[in-house]
Image 1: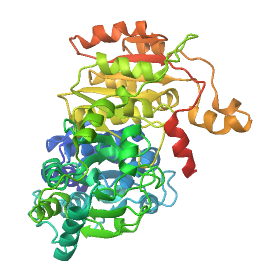
Image 2: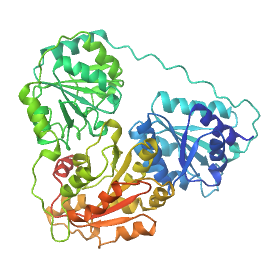
Image 3: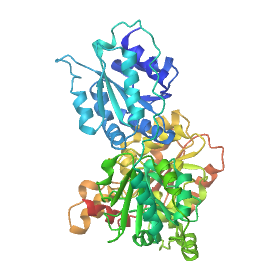
Length: 542
């Protein structure tokens, strides 16, 4: 056995059940060793797609995924996906061959590349035990929730290894960090005094629904989430859905009316607070987070409580007596009547061979099975699926937007689909992102994923059109001629329908009725006269 094979076997033994990648000479042996150890391998058509698939898979399983790429260009191709994962603190292990010969065309400073995007660089050396080194990379990914790049120099990979293959066991889960009892008591007092408390839950609260709902009941708090935790409180009569640019008018009104906002595992960034405008003057802000650095970023906290969200919520609930808070019969009635975008009236602007994206998305929401997992790319269109496509719970929405890169949506949907095979995957893309991710259509077909791929086609990079167009700037660089995306999908073996009016969606209904044994692409030619309302908010940060 060689070092590369020992690394692959060790990672599989650590629990790496899924590996995504594009195989070249520099990662051939380690990838095969992962498979031999029991890890399942998904071959992407581009390394950027592989990294994003792994990111989405890890998010939706709360596990660790592995990315395997060739040295040099294999890694640089993957870097946008790796950056998104690193910014999101997704636990990934990225394995990359590494050329160390100064004359090699493949030689770059791969450790510096990882550091530059916020990933943790590690390297296998001749002096290392490869099994222990692999286990350490896995440990950092799991325990520190980091994206780790493990560089595998070519000459070291080929060294012989005859030691044990069982990696050292990960330490038993450490007990939750203890919190400052005084801070917990202060939060309990703040909730007892509040008349209009609102909870905003982020990624750090995705597994704490029960604890937050029980505390919310005692405190009389309304419940909202950041975009990445969309669906967490689905089914609660006090659920405001998403806070921020995607918030309904009612949610924005009620959050602005809060006298206390408690952010649970949520940084309250400019997207979640509409550049701070949802936090009214005089509103007290509390943040509960494992990382105390979050208390001073974005909207600074008046009180920070360091600790696990579920543990802190239980501790506070034990000190709190029940009160009405923000929960009144009138508020309940309004949430039921106005609490979803479906309830907000709009004038259908379909016509002239194009469909209003709101009309399109509402129709898809009715046609597609409710047990779905929605993945959204970046662009002018992205608010429509994020707002109008309902999801059953927090496991129904995958939002890879920490880096705001266009083009990750289809790969995100593939990773999410593999994580949740019990749900119908929905990929929502703009035409720009669809073209960037086009190579992975073959992956969708090869994996026989029952995926609906919806392309909101305005024949442009719409965000730039609506940002610069009102200032009489030339837009030729961001507009494109019509393209037949449905024909391209059929060329990959994917049934497709072109939609210019609601009646064209009848084929989607037929597909949804079964047997759901393969994908469908919906090429929607959407209206493009105006930018989305959420985009106006977003551009305040540019």
